[in-house]
Image (cartoon, rainbow, N blue to C red; front, top):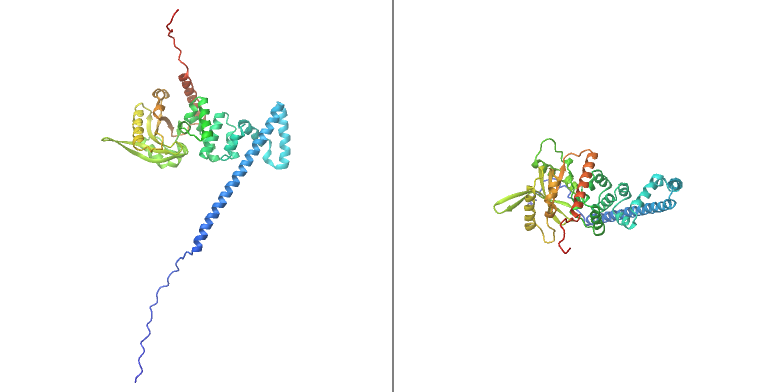
Length: 380
């Protein structure tokens, strides 16, 4: 028999080498989750340590200021106070470093002087650092100091933001600054004790919109477009708690369509806030337009747990007398000017102080009892 022929072996065609695929081992996933947890623990610990150090320093500085102040006041002699400060500073600097210079001790004395109630300081130092307090304690008016301290606590401002707010005269621009002092005190007390924000603490006049970079001729649409482009800066100027909802909000009433320029929501106030932009001066007709929008929003957009919507009319200028006569506050409407360029600070400060003085005088005239010049009828 002839031997069987063996079939030729099949030769496999060479294939392209397959790239190594990334295989995620279960341990890698677990390690990633572990790493994330550890990072969170470290960050939380760092925050707690930072807060504890800050609280310790603020408490120390307040106690030092209070102790020196009581000693100096006891003697009631300026020369004694200056002498004891230099003596104390020299010895403290020698033992503990430059943080206890005469200038630093004066800061501590001022701190204890303008914040005599340590319970208030204790509540504030959870959010405010010593640098925050240094930005506040030399403000001349106690209402300014309390306003900035509480708003900084509520809105969690950085030191830089606080200094910017003070530099742009935020307190003088708020609606509450134009109220009588007892009303301001009441609102700040409620803010401190209940974290209760009111529209008067939030709304301001004027609004500084220099970041929009509007020059020469522009219209309402240009203002709106610039705001949308610079929304982050606009929200910062409005204040913490504002959330953008819509632009050109369609309001359909019967066969007619109306469009609200901007719609926001404020978390602390728990209400919608409508904003209308006006290129020119405020006109009485603007009130009716805003009232219509607010009533529609109240009927169709307001949620059961929300407060009634309120409105802001932003205009290039306004007559305070016209605004006062129309009593817009009763309709939940705030009229404010906007500034596309920040004027010299002295000019702005004078204008704001004049407006505050005029508004408070007007309020005083409203609450004064009316004198009747009609004789009462009766027997002789």
